[in-house]
Image 1 (spheres, one colour):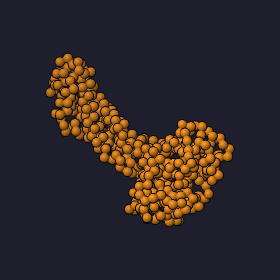
Image 2: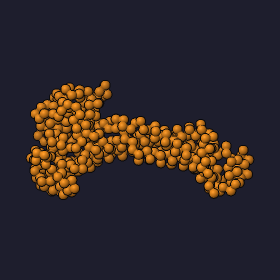
Image 3: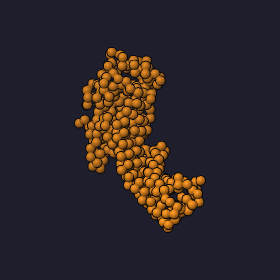
Length: 388
């Protein structure tokens, strides 16, 4: 025979102060857990969305990052001539040979310096990469010292408005436009014409070549063809997988920190739950005796007190989710360790993350309620009745 749930609900209502205090302690733990994981989710999402499943990025053989790569003009031309490269409306290949440089720039409001990706692209880049849209001004003109900046960059660095001048590489560059990129890491970059950047930075070589596949399902064959060609000495990656791999290390570290910090805080929350439930057991000795007298088995008493602890934890979990929700979409930045450049991204709280927060809260409740519940279930009827 099971003890009705209404018994536990009435018990919680009779001691609102201790219930709320314990729940708030768990809520803080859940909020921190969700916030830290939302940070990792946002960073991962920003890099994953940077790439497209329809695109291939090509680097020098053995280079795992763009900044370590080098591809000559002849090799870029050879890649553009392969039949698996998609053609645009004008019949020309949809390919963008690119330069990749990291430069230090001052943030707004004396926020210190940060490394920023300066990417030299071809005019095709805006077609090759889907989701890139000019939201202010225009694109750069060929042959001009002009750049466009991502919206995340524009919000964090001075002199990034249309018509203003950015200075890097000992050269002045006129900002002629701002672009969005569906929240990807491209929004933290500065783009200009590759032919203008090459002589200023890294000479007559590109760091990568990105192209749209004619058939996105043929990647394995395309990769084999490119890497087997003795003229090229290149490695090919599906673009989305390439950028997603850059998030793995930092996202893993952030997730570990989230669990580590939350676990330390959870110890205090669990002790709070233990004290609350022991106090409940001590004050309800006669009730426990009556329940046992009425024929409720000790395991029913144990399950009832455990359920009560879970109720408190669930309240804490809900409060923790509500406390964390305001940071969803909040933009912050960190260093992408793959390129040592700053990437701006938004905290990302997902339903799955909130569910994990609730599960974490319930686990705390079960741990905190276990020993008091066992103590309640192991009481003798006579001793329980005398406790009042």
